[in-house]
Length: 411
Image (cartoon, rainbow, N blue to C red; front, side):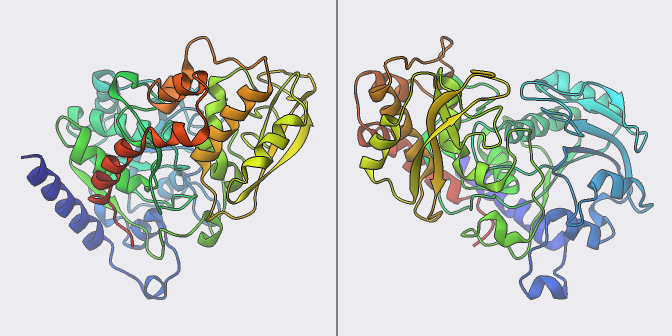
């Protein structure tokens, strides 16, 4: 029963995505075109006669950095009637854990509705009140399970189904490639907004692929889903190969380099160490008061592939240790193809606990929410080394990789 449902959803979604936006001459020559670019090239044919609501944030831009909402609002071929803002907001004015609330956008006059931390029937009621027929999703992801935009996608898909709306996903690249899934798989009893469903910590998928996965595996009733795929994207490519502008998806994701390390170093949010918020290199700088060069030295002895560690000192301007000079490390990735961000993140946690007597986990066990179970915390507390911690999730990861393979759309 499950296999037939999966096969049906995969076939239907793939057929819709590929037939709705025919390839142009530029496509055939291999240059990358985003889902939005391909949708616009058809004159928004998939949205004809529909009142459209767009789930997006500052990353929903054209390659000449005009926001897609502004572009569509000016185009008589498409009827955009509402915008739905996620964490940080539609225009990106809010910090982590915040949103912009309900307001009318000054640039377009469109009503902007707040989706942050809303799901199920309350979010469905917002879609109903907005009067839209079709919900369109276009947000740049960074490839990590705990980055909340993919769960905004999930929640909006579920709510669109409850409200009887169509759902269209415009695809963008996974900036850290789509090569392989890495890291622990979430256990359902640890589900939160930084992980609703059992996927791996670094999922290696695009948002269109994730939408198909959510529809086929996790939603109780699938939403009428259509995807507009990219052309010219290869799973092995990092973001700089796309020639697309990088717009920070959130205030502490300033560059593609941040995204490269994020699926590993964001685990430090679950500790009393700074994860680099309040610096110009968030998630690349890690540290705390009382840490010295011994941490970088211990990491160097591990000879982890693709990465070097520099002893570093810095003073965060906000967040942990605000205004105080602290010691730690800066991560320097020198070989992106060899680098494993999640394994490296575990090695950083293991060695931090070994060399710094002040190491503690956050009192709310946030690390368990980030990693998807108590495994990482309890094994590190028991003195396990990096290999033992990583080996403990391999069977579950292999299971997720088998499921994931059914929903991949690009070679």
